[in-house]
Picture 1 (cartoon, rainbow, N blue to C red):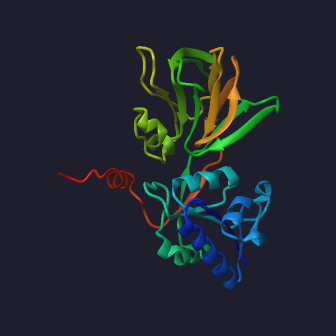
Picture 2: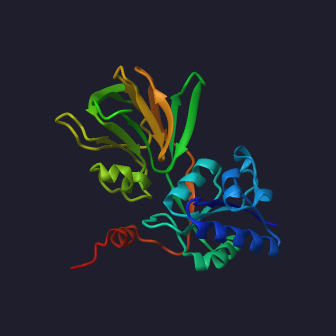
Picture 3: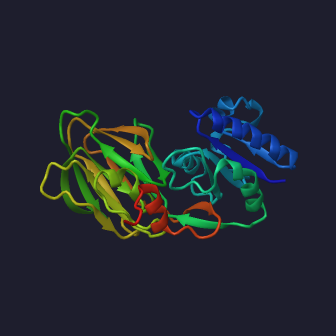
Length: 284
C-alpha cells in the first residue's frame, strides 16, 4: 500500500473535484490518500486530514492539483524530506507542473511503478527572528523577499556575504531566490533567467533608489545576510507567504539547503523549450 499526499488549489472547484476522485480511486487500488486540514475541508474529505506537522511522514509521493503555487505549498509541507512531488496542472503559467488532469491516474501509476524521473531543484533555507518566538527556519523553492511594509519610503537593507559587508541597498525590497525562482518575482524585477538545475543564490533589488541596481549571483556555498537598517522596519515573505514583521537591525540569513526538492518528470524537459512555450517565444 502506498500513501499519497494531496495538495489542492482551494480556489478551483475542478481541482477539488479531481482530488475527491483521486482519493476514491487510490482507495480502490489499495492505496491511501491524505491531506492537510485546509485541503480536506475544501474537498469535503474530513476523514483524510492529517496534522501538517506530520504530513510528510510515511508519504510515498505528493500530488498537487493546481499551478506552481500548489507545488510551493507542497514544498512548504514536505520540506527537505525528499518526498517526490508530481504536479497536475490546474493552473495557468505553470512552469513546474508535469501532467494534465486527464493523465493524473496513469501518471500516479507510473510513479508508484518507478517509471519516472526526478528533477532535483535547489532549496533555499531562510532563518529569521519573529515576534519573540526565537529563531525560525523555513525552506523555499522560489524566493525570500524582504520589502517595505508601506509605499511611502525606500527601505535600507545592509547586505553581507559570509559575514563580510557588501553594501547598503536603498530599494523597495530585496529578493533572494533560487535558480527555479529566477523566473518568478525576480524576473519581474529585472533579474536574469537561470537554468533551474543550476546551484546558485541570486540577489535582485526591487525598484532600487541608487545607481547600482543590478542582480548579483553568488556561489551556493555563500551565506547571504540581510539586515534591516530602516527604523520603520520591513516584512519578510517566503514563497509568497508573509511570515514576519521585521524591526530595525533584525537579520534574515539565506543559504542553499543541502537537500533538494524532488519534482517528478516523465522524459526530458528541456528548459529552453519550456521557456519558449510559457513566454510565447515562437520563431519568427
